[in-house]
Amino acid sequence: MRHLVSVDDLSLDEIREIFERAKTFSSDLGAWSHLCPGLISASLFYEPSTRTRLSFESAMQRLGGGVLTAAEMGTSSASKGESLADTVRVVTGYADLIVLRHQSEGAARLAVQYSGVPVINAGDGSHEHPTQTLCDLYTLWIERGRIEGLDVLIAGDLRYSRTIHSFVFALARFGANIVCVPHRGLELPPYVVQRLREEYGAEPMRADVSRLGKLAAESDVAYLTPQKPHQLSLFTDAKGMRVDHVDAVYMTRPQTERHGEGANVERYLQLGQSSLEAESLRDAVVMHPLPRRDEISSELDTDPRGIYFKQASRGVPLRMAILAALLGRQPFSARPSDAAPRLYPVRVGENPCPNTTCISRTEERHVTPTFRVTDRYPLRAVCGYCSQELPIRLVGCSTTRHFHSRESATARKIRPDHLVFFRDEEHAAALGFSAATR
Ligand code: NCD
Image: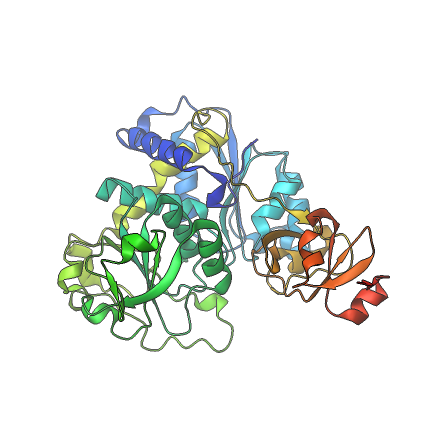
């Protein structure tokens, strides 16, 4: 059984296969009702949605299937204190697939553990939104004919936009270059940048934005490229990587519902004709996952570069392709991803995840915290649910019952399934671990 929790769950060839199928579906959306008759998808939405839920439901009905909707989970048993795990176990008996949106990072990963049917992540907190990303990549593929080598500028709230996080991972994997124009204080989160560097070889560097005009005037712009340094030497100098041409501008709204206190969104970038008049942006398509507020002015609605409504409408054929594949009616023929990260359970001590909105913290009853090792020199690990880095100082080995500093040579050699994380020496001692003798 296949799930779609992260865009990394799909290989690049599978993603290309989805695009081809979506294109075929889009030629006549009404011609595919023979594909999924008798099958039911359940929409479990704990957060508001218009496009994602309706396009999934439209897609399922276009395929001849039925839909169950729990769109306001406040009116469901969640308001009586039912856990996500229990709800998922129950809904597994009612439907053949679950589309889940939830406010906690890692919720879909948890749902997979309790579901007997495929789970699709339709947004988990500020973490990921893989089907929006597929829709965005599909739009680039249709508009530009390729993704490899494109220069894609992402702007706005890069910190809390889950659509951005899934998008940059996929862009880097496809070999596209990313120009980051964040609102001040809403830059890409460190765990995302780290992963881009470590797993996709995309090195962030300074950008020379003199050719971007007003668009980048008030921002600390960064350029991320998966290209090798020798390929870049032609375009870089002391001012940084020169951005001469942009293929797409991807705008995001401020995700104020996740900001808490402190984020200041005054003077948020507003895209209009004047911010796009630089020569380098002359034929850039303007994308947005929607909903927009004021960050794209309506004058771009009639500008041929503004394609955000087209982008939204492509969600239906794209999601038809995803549903048909995961429901087994059109299984993938391309090679699956072999990049699936190995997760290990945290067996000893408390949950080391520092993120208070991670599902491993908000739903402790049903969660065994997990982690993934991302580096060994020095040892680094991230939460298996929300991907945030674990603040490790000391680690132990569950077989020797010794603890070591994270930087030590011994720490590097501990098998991940024997690793134990400690806050400090006292914590280690309380759990029965002693300092290594050498
Ligand atoms: C996005 C989301 O929910 O993350 N919307 C969507 O699914 N199209 C973007 C947003 O809310 O800003």
